[in-house]
Length: 347
Image 1: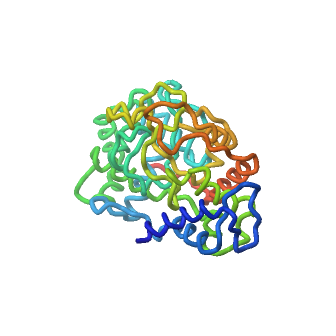
Image 2 (image 1 turned 135 degrees about the vertical axis):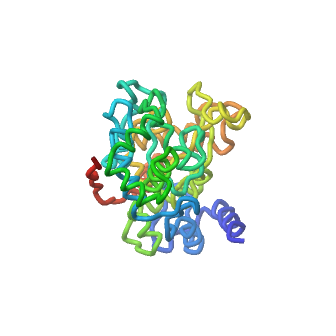
Image 3 (image 1 turned 90 degrees about the vertical axis):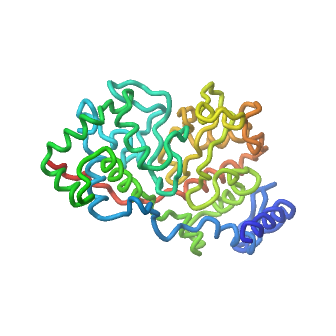
């Protein structure tokens, strides 16, 4: 019922572009605007969840989180003993690496950008092409990959079993299960689920603080949900549909289409979260766009026309003011996350 009402609201929004914000914020020339009721209904769709979801087969405990944190920062998980998960997923870089393409084992430049691990507790499919279903399935992939961490998983298990501190930590976290591929993956997944972006100015605005964001950002939120069509893939508090779309990039990569040979999945890549997005340049799966302004310009152009391109991706006709407002809005999704301390690793 709520979804149906939102659809009605959005139809009315497009039809009644002359409406104004209840706050008295004027719209940019030619922009769609919302009345108070429509804006309030829309903002409710972006309210933060109350708790982090954990699967019943790997419930959260402090011991599991602490163990997963240590494994995440431990370079012994790589074949060279020099690269940890945090080498590419640096908390100081919003859990990415700031590079156009990831750098793996032996300084090899890989084909895709390192995705952030922010807010993955709400994600079903991992990697740009969605080849892993769930964090437990994803956790060991980069470790075992010859191009990434280049670690033999059986050797890793033996290495960790030889560390007295790890034996005690695994026993506390997973009593009676020991150190196995499965418990390593479950511990890392547990820690990764706790990596959640903090409250941002946007969240304060959604909660009722009108002073939390600028008039330009408020206008940008409306453009985001209407004329720019961003919400077709980026609805909800995490600003992602957890899906895969061909957005028309000039790339020969099949993405999800290499795993699912369907026309609609050709050149399709995962929709990443927009949380902390202005700290995660460059953008796109291939790191081909350097700034948020470039991203907005790209979507405004509509990208490459081909049968697999998502139906909502097409030339938008955004004005310069609307583009600037969109960027200002996206900046309000950045939070002041608390500093992350590197744990003392067991010996």
